[in-house]
Image (cartoon, rainbow, N blue to C red; front, side, top):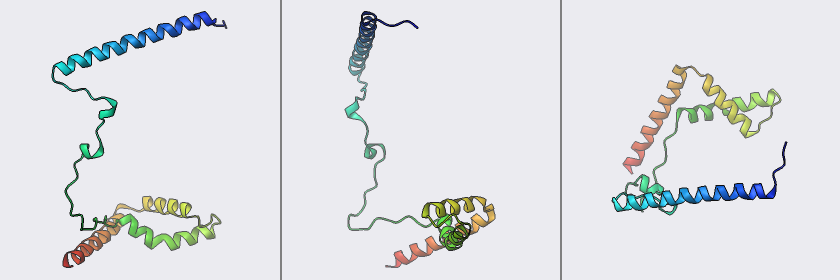
Length: 137
C-alpha cells in the first residue's frame, strides 16, 4: 500500500474544488437561463410548506376538531387486553404495555377475515351512532 504525500493530496483536493466550482457555475448559468424563460427554479429557502402542498379546508374556530372514529382493531384490543395481559403474566413474560400491545397486534393479524369484518362492522356502527348523537346536539 502506498502512502499519499501532502502534495499529492493537495493536488487532488484542488482538482475536486475546481470541478465543484465548474458544476456550480453551470447550474447557476442554467438557472439564470431558466429564469429568463419564465420558469422558476426552487431554492432551498423556497421549499413548499405542508399548507402549500395541501390546502386546509376552512374550519370554524369555535367548533371543536372532529375526532377520528374508532376502528375494529381498537375495539378488539379493548376487548382482548385483559385476557392477553393475564396470559402473558401466566407465561412469565410480564405485563409490560409494549409486550401486551405487540401480542394484541399479533392476535389481530391471526384473526381470519370474517372475524376482522365483525370487529370492523361493530366499530362502524359505533361510529355512526356517535355521529348521530353529535348531530342531535
